[in-house]
Length: 103
Image (cartoon, rainbow, N blue to C red):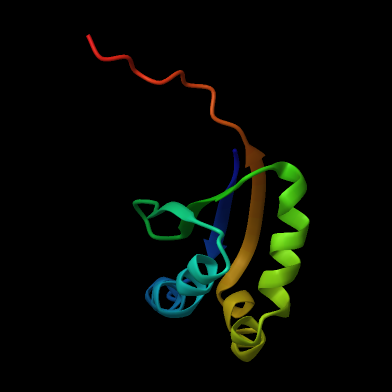
């Protein structure tokens, strides 16, 4: 499994609107398409939205992203997501912690 760590700098004053959009539209669509959202946070000054979504492999990412952007639900959102985002950073990451063993 691999994940994407996504860090969005949200335009000033738009965090609440972005969170509503994310929780009502973006996350449910990810769930429907089999792209699990593992976690999401905002930083303390609420200028960054940080989230992690998981994939089976790095090779799967382009096809899943294409499916996401081609979906009627995403097309219906138009440029609403991008209108909130001043900057976007995306990193593909892999887990390195070994599972904790029971004693």
